View 1 (cartoon, rainbow, N blue to C red):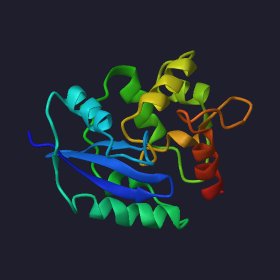
View 2: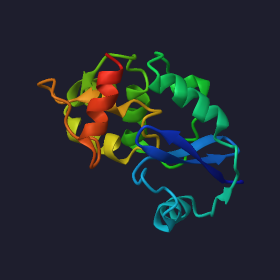
View 3: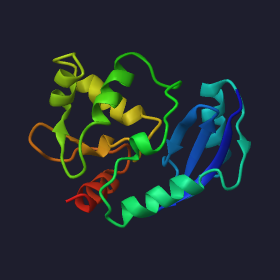
Length: 169
């Protein structure tokens, strides 16, 4: 299996995009202000047990989709891009696949996602799935909100979640 990486611009900074032969393995905005920091790529390499190689231009299609999305075009990244789920399994994967079906401009509570994912009462596990997703933005975890309708967190960047929710309204 070959792993490659490139960067895709977003309003939050450049995202690290890691590809396998099967699709996008990781879209990481955790250090969007400087995604070239070595630990970010090292972290992904450790989880993959392989070191992705640079592939300038690999994220061009992703960049086009991001440009559309951030200009306000209602779109779903999936199925327009193929996700390689190798870094996600168990209930986390089930929850994230459920979240993928939340339509543009709509939200669902953590508890509602848990019910739809087949595990009522697993709202906290849904929150964990959202926090550790390897597919930030392209999988709409920002559409998952607290039961009172308030946005909640988005990693260490709740302002990004608010931005994305506002964009989709």
